[in-house]
Amino acid sequence: MNETAHRQGQTTGHRIAGWRQRALAFALLLGAGLLAAGCSNMQEPPPLASTPQPPSFEDTLTPTQRKEHERLVASYGGAYNDPKLQGMIQETVTRLVAASERPDQKYRVTILNSPAINAFALPNGSIYVTRGLLALADDDAELASVLAHEMAHVIANHAAIREDQVKQAVLVSRVISDVVNDPDLGALALAKSRMSLASFSRAQELEADAIGVGISARAGFDPYGAERFLTTMGRQQALRSSSPMNRTTASTDAADFLATHPSTPERISIAMANAREYAAPDKPGERDTKQYLGAIDGLVYGDDPKEGFIRGRRFFHPKLGFTFTAPEGFALENTSQAVLGADASGAEALRLDAVRVTGDQSLAQYLSSGWIEGVEISSVESLVLNGFPAATAVARGEQWSFRMFAIRFGSDVYRLIFAARDLTPDLDRQFREAAETFRRVSIEEAEKVRPLRIRTVKVGLTDTPDTLAAKMDVPDRPLERFLILNGLEKGAKLKYGELVKIVSE
Image (cartoon, rainbow, N blue to C red; front, side, top):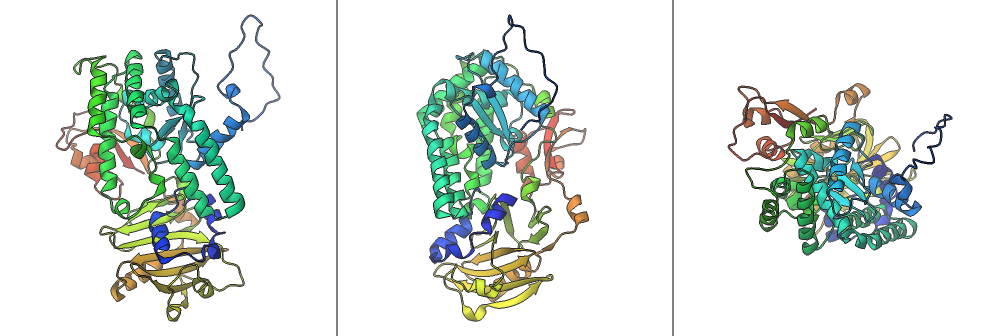
């Protein structure tokens, strides 16, 4: 939950009056998926007339294109600044461009500060790749396959259709912000527009695959990188689909490469057939794992510090200064609009977000004000949670019942909403105990929390996938995540001295 979404969420409050019970349950489980260089007085001498300098990529962009670039980057959490990684990616692009059908086409790659697995290109040659995707790749050939695929969309003119989609996305966001004035709807609309930016037809995807494999092969990269990365994506998609959160939510933050570039067995087999046109499986091209893993060593993995951290059942936001722990058995997901949670059965869920409640309205009055239907007025009570004024109430509908808390934290009010198919007294007690974990964090405590990062380690003599997976700071299934992250199959044997990825602080 980032600070921008936190500020936007403050304005919703009573504006959502009139929601039907079913719509609230959907909104609770869905969650909203979104919410200059310095100048110098020193001047360089002008270049000699005989050696004119070609225009930079930035010089070729129109003001509108620059503005849309800024909008897109902001919607993915900003740009991720890593000069070493950026340099490696740019070198890869330079090689690919020289081997492409359009060596005159200029490209600029922006690393997006998002854990989503995504990459896309715009008609002007702007390529975007998330750090989540970079963490999933294992070598420079897999990276080249992704970049070449996106370049292929530009070369084949597929990306030209996005111009109208971008304009439509801007129009929608302006209507939402200027007329509707509901940030939740605005976030959902922008998230849907993000999905459309990365969507192509099946024929276009397969054409881009074929063109991309050819570009990678001619540039000297292993053409089988596309097949390997598609396989890894498929395994990652299966892992994500089996998690409690994705069985009970439709988080729009998941609108990523896995959804828009489906990794089907058919597509993988076609990618392999394309690769065989350029190289035999036993004589592939370049596949530099060492260089690639060295470039992504230290890459932030998962949640960004400015949006808070999830550690098991605990959510911790050092910048906003609070923490809370979900009930036993819950899995949490941190989106840009709210923190969502669900149990393994899908019969229980939670949502934490921020709203603005005017000073002349008590929290008990707010819970009774009609923003959710079915409130049992007799259940409304005022209380104090760890020194903070709060109120709680129960609301019941046909399919879901809710235990709601409104907690005033400084000038803000946080809504902690628990949902259950069957709100039993025991379950209600667990929800109350979880709400009581909401508290302020000290500066010292906040300074101790660090983001998770990709760490490149050498395999030791006694190391196995199990021992290295045990070192992973991940919420669940560490062995499965270790194998996917390193492109390894179950039962794989590690070689002494080889490099692998783990996730740790």
